Image (cartoon, rainbow, N blue to C red; front, side):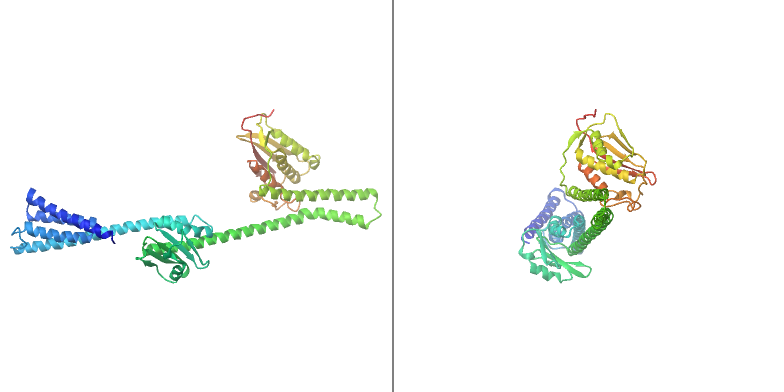
Length: 486
């Protein structure tokens, strides 16, 4: 208030100066009739009401009436009026000036209110957009007070939630927004505005259920704005809580799927070698009359199945290391032939007499690769093709350049993979529904290959058609200096 009073006094002084200026102009410079003077005064009063408000325009109206009476209505130079018509004219002048001032001031106030509402709507929209950026409840609650300070230009904000009994603040605690006051305001059904302390409190309600209180300090917000802020906070909090619960539910569902897949892999992949080992050991222990050849045969089975178990456990450990990013690649420049040759050498005993056609493009660029790891990925694809291809059908391996990558593909003549299963074929422990009981394995091979390829900065893909086989392809980045394979 100590700033408004001097400002209003200055405006009143300016209005009086305008009246004096109009009077001096028409008395000394441009003599005119009384009607022209009255219209000029009315125009000036209307402008003052529009710019400075009703109080200043009323002061100006009284001053203009006195000046009009003293200087322009006969007898001039006195405040007396000789003619009854001039009384009517003076009274009409005063009434019209006051009414015009009131109308102009009301129009000005409505324009200011409309501008304020527009600003509030824009701020509420900005605030609502900011609330939707976070799906984490704790992050949202910590951000809300600071966001209110930034958006609505208040000095401080505090949010109290009933279920957590904790106050989230935009900065250091202020005495006006203490916890006791926030708790007391929670039970109210409407906002509490304390003009003397420049504080506002609004209950945060979800429907009819109070879930907290918001307090602001430094700037008085309108009742409608406070209610809208409280509603937006309640909706955003419940939305974030629902998203968080949905994420937890989805994580639990995926964990259950992974557990089921793991149990299925254990049941189908580990049971067979364990059964063979158990049967062989039991036969050795219970039948002392076995010949040396029979004992060697059983021991060979135990040895092979133990290797198989060891390989399965090794794949699981490898998958865990790859997921955790604990595998360090030894990247060097090599021709893709090195990877293909190493993989075929590793698979020689597995492939047996199956024909493998290799087609490598000429003058392929060198690739940046960890040969051992890339070989491991290619071995997984070759063994996968060998398992699912009918006996006597060849496997085709090709390599060709494609921009900044070399693409290596493994094609089989197997049963193919259904379209709906293809997006999941690289998931851990996932195996095609039609083949999971016919072909052994854990479902980790393709997942391991995918992790290794992506660790190199490449990508792995599948093209398959039911009944016509599958083509697995992966990319490896080329050496930047453009070296060519010889």
